[in-house]
Image (cartoon, rainbow, N blue to C red; front, side, top):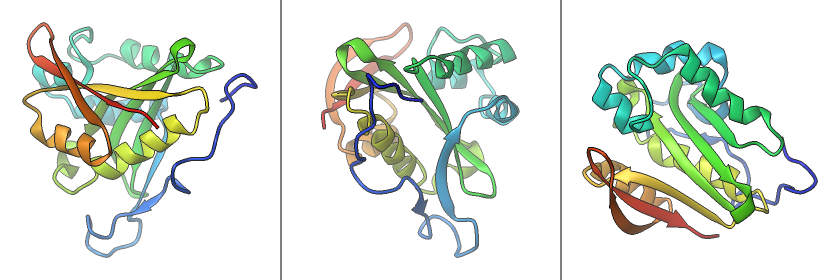
Length: 189
């Protein structure tokens, strides 16, 4: 995944697997982990966005509704370069897929963009977004070439903004998207 030019550094905290006993009844398979997004995950992701508005909120106005296999293949294409242009991840608890996110890299300028963050509809409200975001932050910032991590979030999405702020992102300026205002949020290691 990394080349000599973009070596991995030590993560902020050891490990990217967290126990979520506060989120689930104490049952086996409560470990949250990020795994590479693969074609077999696509049908699960498709079901999470029932309306065009849901899809735009998640992926922006450039995605077509309904989400198609061709769009999924486009997401995967960025994982194949060295260094990768994009890393797509699914979060799983060991018993089911519970989230998705992507890291998009601007290697020349040392930036990474956290994007396409979603929690499966049936898993929302269980405290998964914070740990999933923290794992993505750790993955991005363990790359020595990455000096800044940023994301854009709709200004009306207060739960997401609170999640990102708890993960040490700082709210920046507000811009206008085709339909909604978005806030720029950033983190510097």
